[in-house]
Image (tube, rainbow, N blue to C red; front, side):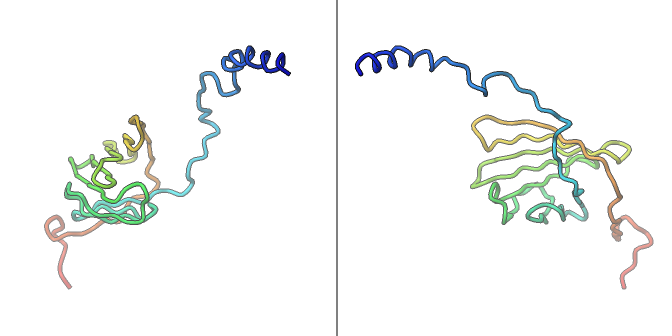
Length: 153
């Protein structure tokens, strides 16, 4: 029995350095990615940002101030700031701490949306980029200041 224990103690360091199936460098197989099939529906009209297909749905002022949101376990407030006609910045917070930032830019032709994001919820920031293609135009909102054909009813 003592010989068996001695042999196990001597072999233990070898097992510590043995290769496991997880050791190595890995690369994602993009062709196997399972992305959502349902399109996302956004609108940014008269100072309000809406995401009708987000879970939970989002409807907040786009004034750059923190707006309370509920139903999302990862954030409890969202700030939406319109930078210019084609760029919007988002900042999500949980308990006052920024957990994600996004910058969404629409291409000059209006058919591509690029979302550059930074996820700050973990111990190290994770950055990435999503590219979206427009599949249908949004509803046009007529306002008094921009539409001479507007009239109250």
